[in-house]
Length: 218
Image (cartoon, rainbow, N blue to C red):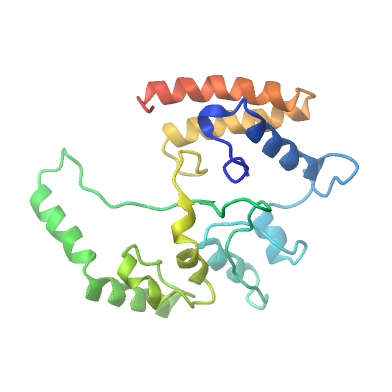
């Protein structure tokens, strides 16, 4: 919501970020108060058909269908702020080879093998035999093959609108992402205690700035 509203992690004290936090918090504030801590998490609530829409990574579709195999659902691209350019936060894994590996040449050859068209399509085919769908292709030239898929077509259709920022939860990196997410969580929780939106995000900005300096990110 911060990014869609024109905000930035390095400018959390600006009106764009403050407005996004205010809109987010209003879901749990009077007079609407459509959410409270007694409710299950969003994925469970959706699977139990207690909420009409959730915003989740594509792999959570598998979880939802496991929890409720009979649920009828439709997957679409991320809703956008009216009048704003469509944007979504990317959440993905990247293969790599450790510089400390004793078999770097062989490892790079293996990765090169994995990303060949015929191997990626074969892997997707095998994955789709044991679950609803395989991992979305990372190759742009294979995107059209799954663009119409009922479950992950949206991943491809909004691919041009992704931005990558270090604020993805549950990366378990115990580093950049986790530390920044913690400051954002603290900002939300602070407003519950009566701290103003602006003050909460100013404190978060100071923390995020320290994290970015720590990892030498400009």
